[in-house]
Length: 392
Image (cartoon, rainbow, N blue to C red; front, side):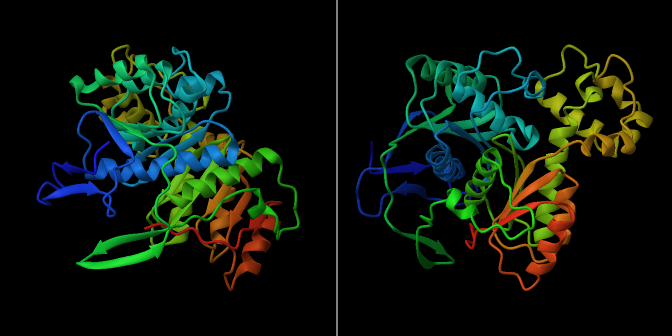
């Protein structure tokens, strides 16, 4: 380990000099095993490592995150995957260890946003996880350790330049953190707030039943939000984030953005999408983009322009709005977390359209009664956590 690392540049090429170091002069808690990570790579690496470490502590399951520009595109813990999910995540041809499973789920929920991601793993990167990482477009990975086989695979990725960071799992940062903005230093206590099931005891709705798997999903959503640029909301189902809305000025826009991503995740599981007649030589990234267009309302324009011939062996059937709505109406038992209170019931109305049944949010709005009434209208269970999770 070293005391500081010089970087090529900061957020942008004109921002020089750039380096990372420990203010107290101690060694950095990381080793660079391969590549040359940059400023944004390290921001993603350190934020995502905290997220997966907390997910592991809270659930006891290995966890993975897929980060882009200091917010997660996906996060997940290990859980069995259906054949349908394996297919839409493009891992139906791979053997998956628990760690590889968690990363496949973290990346698979929003594959377009995860393109070129930085990966965080809560446990050792094994051969199966490295083989999965090898074939995806990614900037780098951070993990507490790597098997010899995994490290060899990753060192050969991207013509030998792939970024591989090993972090000391026992590293504990100082309780006070600093940040410079416009030449002015900000100081605050680190957000060491522990997120666990105790946050879900104050249930304010008529429906007070939150099953154990839903509690797990709410905890995953809240931990994910703790490391997502605010305002933010997160939809979770079966142990994985399926829609994350980050960095919006309006809470309902977060709810819509994340809800649209959750809808896309579920629409990709529709038989029409699973049966799309792709040409054999279409790459995974192009399939992702094409599927996104196919399930959007823009697909009629693509058909009219004849662009379908670039990707399909035959013209696919149109996936009508009515068919999509009918399919989405079968999505259920989704958990939703919010990093701050919902100011209006319109957020709940939008969440209902994406199958949300369980909600965790701080509460404290002057319109809490309206939000609770809207939840009661749909039989949702909502817990007030009394803890805001802004992250900037």
